[in-house]
Amino acid sequence: MKVLVVGGGGREHAICWKLAQSPQVTELYCAPGNAGIAQIATCLPVAATDVAGMVQCAKENEMDFVMVAPDDPLALGMVDALEEAGIRAFGPHKNAAIIEASKAFSKELMKKYHIPTAKYATFTDYDAAAAYIQEQGAPIVVKADGLALGKGVTVAATVDEALSALKDMMVGGKFGSAGGTVVIEECMTGPEVSVLAFTDGKTVKPMVSSQDHKRAYDGNQGPNTGGMGAIAPSPNYTPEIAERCMKEIFQPTIDALNAEGRTFKGVLYFGLMLTADGPKVVEYNARFGDPETQPVLSLLDSDLFQIFNACIDGTLDQVEIKWKDAAACCLVLASGGYPVQYQKGYPITGLDQVEEAVVFHAGTKRNEQGQFVNNGGRVLGVTAVAPTLEEAIDQAYLSAKPISWKDMHYRPDIGRV
Image (tube, rainbow, N blue to C red):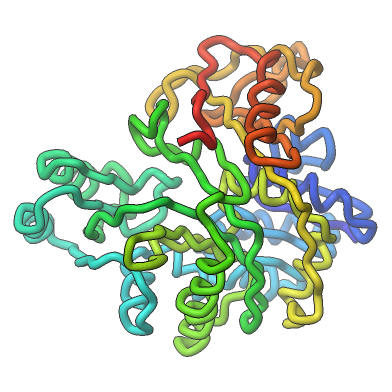
């Protein structure tokens, strides 16, 4: 079958890498893709957010199946548009993808259906929001309502920091229309865990747990990023917690969306905080997380394409999903200055010297000389699998050693904090 993956980051490289292993996938395409993805798939020059262009591309190239990976096109209704054109597509419809596209919606859903989460308030008025922050005190969390590339959340240690973040969002327009509405939450404490789950709208099958590292600098310091690395599984996610999450969070969320007439088929990401009062939802994503996808799919021992089809057909309960009895670590190599300002176009060396790891490309292209160069904030995800988590972490760092480009930056403590 001819399969098209929409997107162009490290997550999409991992998805393409796994789909390429399926005997059912005979031709693999990615739009827009990147230089690393181009080694295993044919890249097509269509922007991930160009809904009409992507539908046209899929029709012209006679695609049998399209997997929509990023949040923006899902929120724009790309799956709906593809299906209307008669093209089989994987991912939630627009009315279900709102669970990520609007934090205010997701908080109201959790409140209505008694799904555990942080206490919160939603505001469209800056003065009212500022007064609420001063009344609540710090630490406190300020979130832009809409999609902001994983950077629309500030965990403020002081009231001044919270007010500054609020002003950036609501007055300064830092995240455009995404910051017109804000959600202000109590600051939960405890280990954070990500659980991605396959669902066909009825059955929920969680993947192996993972843990992302959002802060830019060592020791979980600095600004939030899209993610500087991830491990799987999380040592904090015990079978007892998993059972509780299924009963109190995972299945109730799918049931709640069904009750609202927003049946969700695809991958639903549960960002969890393991608090003293039990697991609570930090956020939902309507798709695979990045960089969690890289270590999680590295541990998948089943045919991903078969799972995707079961999610669409409503037959997920009939599919056995197998996982390796191992651990994985993805170390993100980023451009110096990320997530604020950084330079592109520096040649990358040492990729041909990497052993015992898969290097997923996130932000790369080839220059006129044919060299790989950095072309984004997060550039590469060095992903290693080993029998134990400690070995996987060590192997990821060892494998990254030969790789270099000007001002390359990575955290030395992924999986260790």
